[in-house]
Image 1 (cartoon, rainbow, N blue to C red):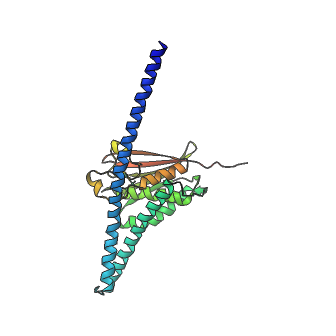
Image 2 (cartoon, helix red, strand yellow):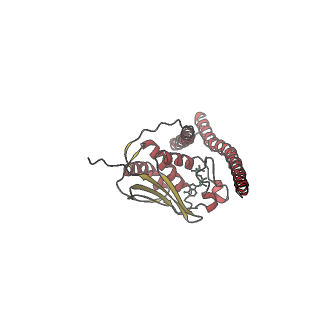
Image 3 (cartoon, protein in one colour):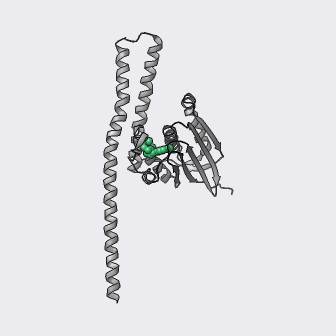
Length: 261
Ligand code: ADP
């Protein structure tokens, strides 16, 4: 009888082992696929601004610009595209540093509301131009965190909310305190994410590759970076999304322990 139990137990362990190995292999294959797509995405992402910069710089150099106004416009395109390139490169650098565990975060008391307000101020011009409505409800909440990393986290979530908003053009940002946590929610009413894709959304290099989404540019690193920053802050992130209705990303940070002594 004992032998039978032993054999059954060994069998179960064997089967579990095979299943785990199989799962791992499948995950690796998926990652390799995502990675090769990443390289082609990034090459494309970099090539487009480079082509524009080169074209407008050449036109300016050859003195083929008829008016001062046009000149200004071309300089402004060069500037914008350069910023875009810088943004892509910074994102890749940040991600790889975090991924290799090389990024040193410096933790201090951070007023999260202020971080949100500072980030939103940088979007003001763009959002107004694109006629986005952005609604905020922000409570005072202090957490122990790295201000730059938190800024990066927020920028990635807001960039995505804008990018995947489609026609709705409405974003809500809420910060509230609940059960010892500071909960930061970024909500959009855009394209949404299917239940299947939700499982992979925080994986590095993952991008939704179907429908209109495939046409949007991106690296597939934004949310992986967000997840790294969340983990470094002992926080958690939750996604609520319905295809075609929109997405809400909620990050819960432990509130800073107030020393009343
Ligand atoms: P990307 O550079 O492709 O935007 P991310 O890592 O930021 O990379 O996001 C991964 C994928 O998750 C995106 O390609 C997109 O399909 C999906 N996604 C992210 N945020 C949203 C959102 N707010 N609404 C719908 N889809 C989203």
